[in-house]
Length: 72
Image (tube, rainbow, N blue to C red; front, side):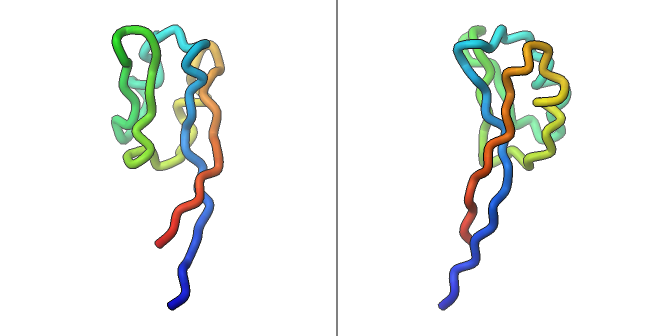
């Protein structure tokens, strides 16, 4: 049986630089981001579709799009 692999990009937040402004929450079309303890944002990779809107809109520019391998 062949295993298919696909590389997709997912949002990744540099937590120690996040200012928890909430901009990413407002622009994420899948509600894949939440603010943890009012300190930093966190991405739910299962919900993230890799659209990169959050990384483009992030005021401190601390959201990176990182390649993740998915097996299906």
